[in-house]
Amino acid sequence: MSLSVRTQHNQIDEIMNNIVRQEVTATADKIVVKVGTRVLTDEQGRLDSQRIASLAAQLSQLAAQSKKVVLVSSGAVAAGMHRLQLDIRPTDLAVLQAVAAVGQTEMMQAYQQQFETHQQITAQVLLTATELDDRASYLNVRNTLLELLKLKIIPIVNENDTVAVEELQTTFGDNDRLAALVTNLLGAQLLIILSNVDGLYTGSPNGEQTEILETVEAVDDTILSYVEDTNNALSRGGMNSKLQAVKMVTSAGENVVLANGHEQDVITRILAGESVGTLFLAEGKTLSPWKRWLRFSAQSQGTVVLDAGACSAIETEGKSLLAIGIVGFSGEFAKGDVISICNDQGLELARGLTNYDSTEIEKIRGQQSTAFQEILGYCPYDEVIHRDNLAVVLT
Picture 1 (tube, rainbow, N blue to C red):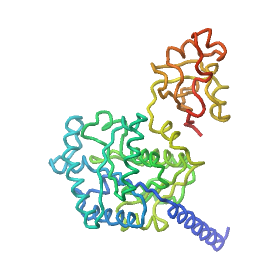
Picture 2: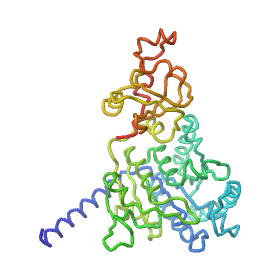
Picture 3: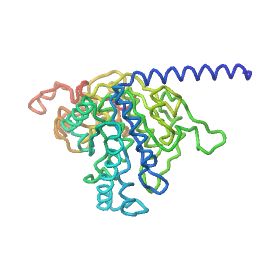
Picture 4: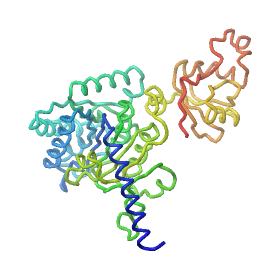
């Protein structure tokens, strides 16, 4: 290919990318912005007042344009560490919670001061994993956030580090995952993840042949192979956690932009359709709110293992789960619990609400539903999990 032809192709690609970006941002009514600790803090680990002022100005402008905006903010632990003059993130859980409690106050005060200069009201929303696992609590959180947005208030969401136990170390893991869960909970059309990198690179950012991907159509094995994960003393998330969050959102049918939060007016430029950072496009159709909760937020209480035929029926044919296809199970679970559906290699295929508890599953697995009456003495359901209450995990 000649240089001129290659140049023409590159120009066409750039034009198409710009058109796609403009369409994505123009149609985004609800937007979640996640800002990382390394964006909010300076080199000394202190909250960067200028950065917070810039965030407040950009988000207030979006709200004034009738966009519904949610901010998922890290930084509480970092702010507390600086206030308490700690150089290394504590590993003791009680100390971490104390540090977070100190930092939450300082961080929210900084946000409130800056948003007030734009006459923009904000609200603090602290979440734990349990609140997004339980269906009733999940809906309560959703209703609260939607009502705040209806009132043109910007919710500032963070993990409730001051009371969390597992959450501080394992469950959410970091605010990238929390931002993805909030995006799916609200059905927001766009998640913007602001970090200290310009986007997704095809290798080490310092490599001579490395380049930034402008658009990613699917987070596949090739994309995941580009990851070089790092952590520092202040933050927990890395590029791997960001790609996992991206996958959660794009597989639910929404879009994500990963960009450098240190760039001037980065949010405004993204929403204007500029080629900033990496755009990850939605994969497949939009999932319903019910399926999103089942697939991403609900925690599994047990596992059933299926034979090959049942796996195929679940994955490709859109069938309900029948007892005849179950070859094994683990855990103790009750009727109505969320359980995982796995193949014989232990790979999770789907999740769903079970119509039978673990004691009943032990008796009816491998059996036709016509035998339930004789085995159990009753047959309230032909299906162990009805298709309407099942969400496929692998696509």
